[in-house]
Image (cartoon, rainbow, N blue to C red; front, side):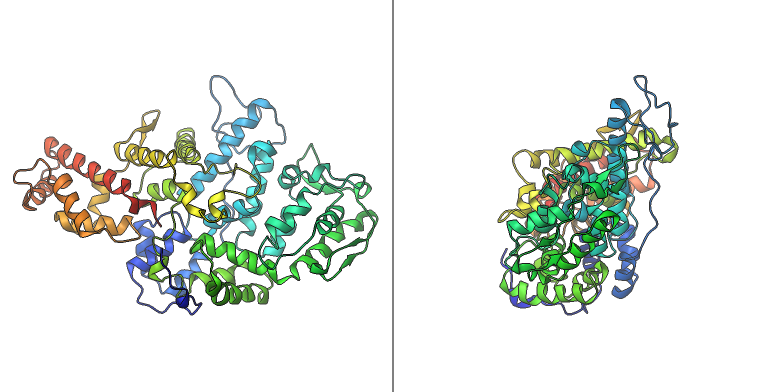
Length: 534
């Protein structure tokens, strides 16, 4: 896409607050632009909208036991109670609890409040990557998620510190195996390369810096009974650690006993003194929320001042997001429909925008089961929450030059189309409870569904971030909505069918006919390239 870098600026957005502006904001900051959310945010001023999106939320209720069946019953945790209070794990309950954890997480996205939290949890999950299959302990995975959730809109330095000592991360990157006799370099490397200073043009840490950081980090291990981390002074390397000129030749004095843990604070102070930390994180936020390409003009006029905001606010995350998402640049036309939807944006966004109904908490086993159905479908499209492909996260968020284009290939595109077709037809079910797009209910919320042209125009604006061409609109009207109706070329026949549905809802033949045409309409709209973009 041709882009004008000269327009890149962080001036506050002062345009007219339109439905299209609100949808753009919500598609990027939440999963899909739910019509109720659009109406709510549209009624606010932009300033109040950003305040709500950045609001803190209480922690959600934890995942529960929904996994008892004829092959296994959890004797410790009753059905419907949370298993996060248990420290007893075996080969039977652990796998089931991991599935419960992933379903619960997907459910939080489906039922998210009007805040950035769920999107930011995914952002940080991709940044501070762990893999459920490698951690292999449902409780540690849940606690890691709760940690990211707690700090998602807080202070970045604080988050780096707690992640460093997090039991799931310690296990994932071999921190538990690291000791003074054999410092493991894995986390010391990723702390710098992936988590803080990155691999950008201003990052020049050395292999000796990795080795020195590894020595600082010795001593942390996990309690294998309670699954919490602790500092073991006997495992800590108490020698002095000297770093390179990139870190101003800083020496961290070695400490013995419990005071050895204080070396972590000195390590983070040294790292966060480097301006490249703020630039690296701001680049990642830019690519996640706006566009993957960062040219020289964007680096100078967006990333550099945004990084200054980050440092001036002591690495608080909210001021950076408020500046970026509230900017004129964020709302520019060239940034709309410029990103290919991630699988989560595709599946969860579809469910939210069409108002797909899931079982409520009184049928918690079916509720979790259908949440897991969507999670499994998303995983098949190559975004398995809890299990990114490697420590760097999903390549679509960082792999040059393809970036988000990596989400679409000969395997994943057909899966997306099959998912949307099945949702329109109600093909996913559990114990008689179906996941389906209620095409009649959705169409009734449009401005003028009796007018086929207005119906198509309104549906396209709801579902697409970029316009649908007049040629496409005419084709859809004549080949789908008017297909098989007398005359076909006259809008009157669709209008009559819709008005008959309203006047005579018991007319089964007409209702079936209208429903089938609407199913065909939405299947077609979701299979077009425009629906892949956000």
